[in-house]
Length: 112
Image (cartoon, rainbow, N blue to C red; front, side):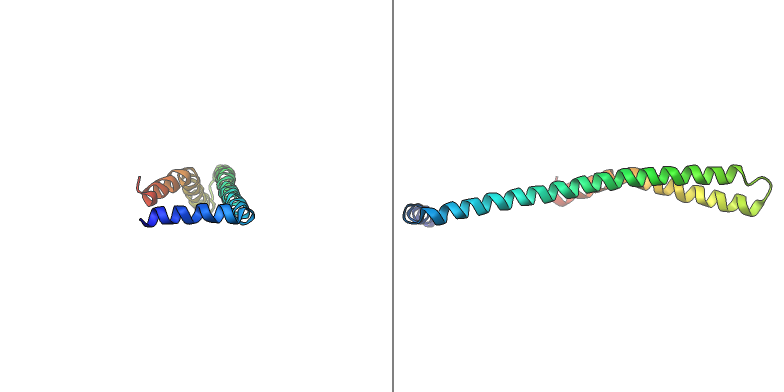
């Protein structure tokens, strides 16, 4: 009963006030366009930041490897370079797995 009454009310409003209904439809469509473009923006931003993180982690891994190779017999430099290698490898693994972790969380949040 309520559904048919709502439908009749919408039809009556469309017949008596077509300009307002057209404005409402335009507003709804514009809202959907803006929301989809914002979603696309953040999706692109996420992909770009992931690529940047992978590039930076790879650079620091190479830098740490260079420090390790040039440490010679100095044990302090070798220990610092080894810890830098571990940090760079951890950052690289996190950057690579970020997309997978985010999709798992997103899927769990949506109930899939």
